[in-house]
Length: 293
Image (cartoon, rainbow, N blue to C red; front, side, top):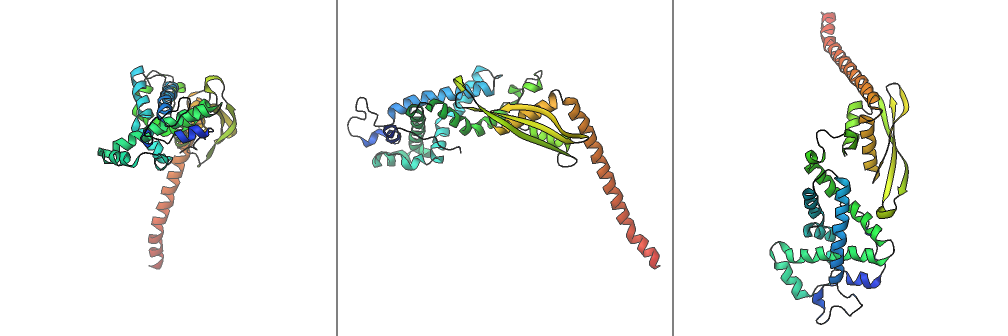
């Protein structure tokens, strides 16, 4: 899990983990925030926005209905409760003992899981409110936190994300680096070198997010450090995948196809050589027997 962003405000940091049941009277002293109720309300809106932006940019070919369902996967209470437990929020939340006992007796512990989901929403709001760059910091953190879910969604919608007539250069494939290595037999006659060039901090509505730039070079099959592609991505892994995609389907497509032919030829020669060596070894015992006789 990515590192938890800090909450600079002591008042907000304290309120995030306080359930309303620990106060017998007013939960909110006017301009003060005592429990997480108000933070949860705001955090819910922030999470919806961050998830919507992420889904929209990652899966632009999906319908609005599919986008809404994917967003629900990211922000539903089960997901948020899981995140809360991962960060140890379940040990920090303050709930009246009798109320907590009643919650834990609910089927599947849904009562306390609801609290953990609410606490997570409150924490998101606290991060956004506690310092000037809080919004960007929260979005960057959640984008990384949701990455495994995004990969699951990608595989679930692959046929929806990739129309049959779509340009392959525009279609993200998280397995592109493995595909290119398989085609060129990387490690057996050639080397594919993915080199990070730089990172750029985004501005505007993507403030706080980094853009990775990676160069892909090929050594082997008659090439020495041949530049195949330069690509960018939200992280290093994504940038490498886009570089492999550009190499296979962009301007160097013919180079990849030519090297693939050489790779297959080299593979055939290795197989033939092994068969010859095996035949030679099989003959040796019979030759030895003839000599003895």
